[in-house]
Length: 577
Image (cartoon, rainbow, N blue to C red):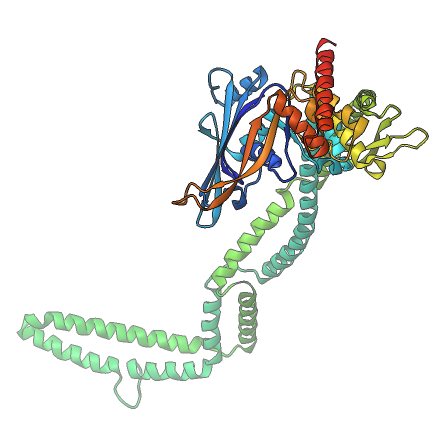
């Protein structure tokens, strides 16, 4: 229950402290007086959207604070969130809205502790239920009708709905895995084809030595210049070892050796030089023999030269496709061999994923069927209950049915829920939004809230002009229903109907006033503010007279007194009933 509401610098309200109580709390005032600002403040402090217009002109900060007296269930929930109650029973929800550098920011606290938006949404769901004028237009939406049916079904139905949501999520995951695998399968097969072709080509190339290309290039040079190499080999041999026309290097070294041998006999210090000449002579003779043998072995081999050239061309072509060097090509060859093996044996089979998807789908269908059965039972109860609540609202002959049509499974089940309605005898049942008038929609919504309040505990219920567009006997019926809702609950209601206002357990008057701006030095500047005051019996009589006729005439006062007298009688009647 909302005990108090404190507002500072919010819209047209400079400062307001409002004390509320159990039962029906009504708010009246002229059109545009600011009644909805009170409800906007309740909505905002519990997480509603904020914008810069909510901060009073000239101010930089707005503060909203709502104090609730909580029941055991909410107290236990707050304990789970590690939030202690104030004085053992109170929860104080506050929100600070600031304007800085043209940007609006807000911070929310619960009993002084900063809380997240997600937690604030949970607080709102537990503390307050706000029904605005435009919500009657949403009654025709099948999604909202389904949610209300589920809410009426209580814990068992909501638990079944969560089971469906979990099964649906698992089914979508299995479906996504299967679709991804199918898409991957196409890519895998394409990749397999490419790898198999490349491996086949590299296998045919018989790559074993990373230096093969360089070796072949050297062999190509040798085979391509056999004649030149033979001639040059003969020349070297002539210079080093065998020369008929002039002395060769070996002949000159032999002469030097003989002279040094004679010199050593006289001076042994020349022995190292002699040894070097001897070594040089031996190396020159050996080099001559080897170059001679090399030249004799050289022979023209056009076939081998063609083989080498063909192999070089093949390896260069391979390098252009798979790597800059033969070493890189061999490394790539080893890599794609490993990849091919993984693609052939390393992935979960498509059949296993298809089986998992089928099993998840069957489970989803099963839990959806269970949810449908619960909804059908709940629909039957709601039909009976809602008609019972509608009859006192001047709808004695009303017919109501919850149609449940099968659809493809979704996260909310496999049901399309549609409220069908016939307000007049002899008229067929049709979708609620297609035939119900504004007044009928208001009464339907009110009856629906009455059904919810009886099957589950409800926090503060807020109605913003739920009685708009009705009058006379219908207005009286709505007034009585709002009062009944207030028995054991707290109801806040903005109304223009004197009949509804008369049934209030507390009556608040909302008005705009123009006052001198305290910020100005001489008070000459004027500001508009909203003021709220709780009315006593005499003030209520005057207010009801104004609502009824727009002036405090004798007849209007008498009518107001009669409304208050009848309201007292009805309150006593329902209290004792």
